[in-house]
Structures are given as structure tokens and as C-alpha cells.
Length: 496
Image 1: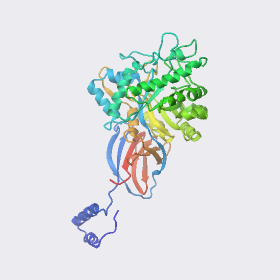
Image 2: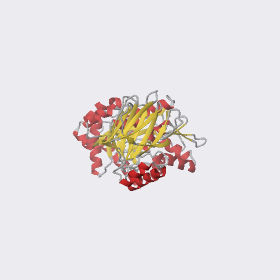
Image 3: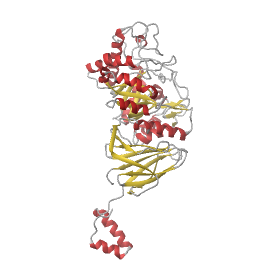
Image 4: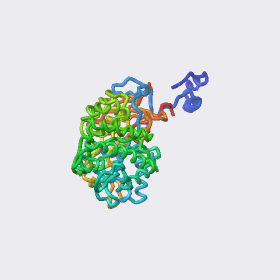
């Protein structure tokens, strides 16, 4: 933009000399009379995989003009939740593959590609408190355990408590924090110790806490206190903990446990919350941790109890049933409580890259934050080409990456690129801001980072090419996005 021009400059323009014009531009640029065009960096992933988080030639904002295209307005004045981060789960299976099946050089490269700016810079990890359906021994065999397993009787004083069987997971979490010291960690239990479960059905696989034994709830609360303290002693502070993975589902196939909403209220309100407070532990407690479809009723019971709500930071959600807007309903009902999205897995039930990318972008990377989620976490960080090794879990699930145990070769799956469109650019502490949404065509989410950079993520979820204009304040740029593709734009709020 030209500011007020002096008489000599006007004479140069009138002279029509190319040299004069070049000199004029340089004089104006370096004297501040021309403001530099604001550059927009962008990274593209396309359904045909010819672009995979590929950096493209930067664009430049221009002065706003009327357009007949779809217009995506980005409004940094309208602000929503603050983001904690994006990531996946450091399961026992993932730890085994990364530690035991990769060479030191392969492992280092993978850590770079997952947890640094060289790669996708994941910033939030979940791990299982004890065993899950993806827990194995150091030689890759199925392993079901908790931190206080006894052959017979009860161990109310937790004299047998130990996190030793988490050795490989603890090792992996240290490797991750070596790459990203600010990594946040979340723990989730799949089952209480078998001796705490209903009398006569003491098994890790299924059932529920023994409500007939009043000492069990107190012991289970102390179990979590000791877990948090043990990980803290390992140099791994636990930022948040969910109370029970998928409390509405149990199975005889792997460690699991039901916990109804009223039972979770009682456990948090009367036992776990006070136990953590007594020890001065600030780990966030998060309820529910199950599918979108039954969220409102469970959250209503949990957060509607003032005693439980006092200790409960918010609720967590999975993707396997329902739609992301269920999280907005919970937010509307309890606007002072936080929302976390904590699990979703891709799998061989759909191997089409473009279909998976569009679904992930629409429901997870864009849909979950637009419905108030502070985190977006996928399930296994790494699995092998057969979806394992597993401990009774999904026979055809897919990790963020696939590791071939015979060669150590690492394949980046569609989930890697979907996550990367957010995690590489949206920093912890970023605030979601307003952006226009065209459902089924161009879907978007936008953020302002702590360094004042702005990020817009857009996905074309349709089967046709989509042309659109992005408008920020009075500046615009145009772009055309291929079908079932995604793009991330980044620019500074001050011209650079």
C-alpha cells in the first residue's frame, strides 16, 4: 500500500523509466512507504498421496475484493478454548515395537518424525495405567496385569504395588520427553486389580468394583495416588488422568471394567478426589472417556453432582459411536468444564487413503476442536503390519505408523498426516478462533498460537474440487483444493 508520496517520487513515476520504477519500489519498500505483502505458508495432503504434508509455494494476501467463491472468514477476535495438544497412545505394543524391533538409527529417526519440528511435533501422549488390549511383555507376548496383583487374598494396604511391568512404556515416554520436554501425559486405567472386583468374579477381563466391600474404594483411590507418585518419581509427571476407559463396555477378551455414572460420582466425590487433595496432587481428573453417543447422559450425572464436579476437570470422548457435536452439548450443559478427545483408531476395514483422510479431518482434526475438545488423541502410536502385537484387542486396527518387525521399516499411515496437519503447526497454548464452515464442502478450524501466528486448517470433504477465498481482516487469498484433500495455512498477524 502506498503512503503519501513526495513530489520527486511522483516525477519519477511520470518519467516512465523502468530503472526509475525499480529504484522507486526499493526506496518505498525500505523507507516504509510500501508495506510488504503478508506471506501465507501452506502444506498440502491429497487423496492420491502425491502430496503428503508437502510444503507448497507461499501465497500472498491481497486487498479484499468482491468474490463469488466460497469465502472463509478467519476472525481472531472471536476466541474459544485453549488447546493442550495433539497425539496418540504409548501402548505396551507401541513401546515393544519401537524399543525391540528398531535399530538405534531407525528409532532416532522415528522419534524425530513424530515428536520434533522435523516431523509432526506431537505434544500430548496417553498411556494405559496397567494393561490394556495392547499390552505385551518385553518379548512381544500378551500380558495382562495391574500395579497390585496378588495370587490370593486382598492387599488393601497395597504392599505389592509396583509399576515395574510398565518398564518398556516408561522407557518410551522418556524417549518421547527427550525429544519434547513439554510433552503432556495422560493416564487411563482399563481395569482395577482383580482382587478389588466383585466377589466370586475376580478377573481383569470385565466386571466391576466390589461395591459390597467398603474398603475397596479407599484402596483403589490410594492405588491412583501411588501410581501418580511412582510416575513422578520416574520423572514423568501425570498432567491428567481419566477414571476408567470405556466405562460402559466390558469384555472377557482383555482387561476392562464397567463403571456407571453414579458409581463414578461416588468414587470421585468420596474417595479419589479427597485422596489426591490430601496429597497435594494437582493431576486433572477427567470423567466418562467413552463414545460420543452416550455422552450427554453420563456427563449430566457426573458433572451435575456438585461434590464430584468439584474434583472433575471435564469429560473425555471416543469416536466409535455417535458424532462430535455430542461434545458441544456437554459443553453447553457444563460450560465451565473442559472437553478432551482421547481415542480413535483407523483400521483395515477402510484402506482408502482419501476416504480416511476426509473422515479424520472432518470428525477428529477439525470436528473435535470445533466442538470444544482441547486435545485430539489417536489410539496406538505404532503397530505392526498385522495390527499387533495385541492382547485380545482389535484384530485389524492401524497405528499412527506401521513398523515391520522383520526389517524395522516404518510406514506412515493416513493418521500420521491427518494429525500432522494440526500438531505440526498448532502449538500447546494456542487458542481456537472463529472460521467459516461449509459442512460437506470446505470444513475448517483456526487458531492463534502463543507467538501470534495464525493457523487455518481446511479440508475438502467432497468428491469435487473446491475453489474458495480466505479472508482475514481486509486481506484475502484464493485457493483451490482437490477432492478429499487437506491443507494447513500459517501466517503471522504482523507482516513479515
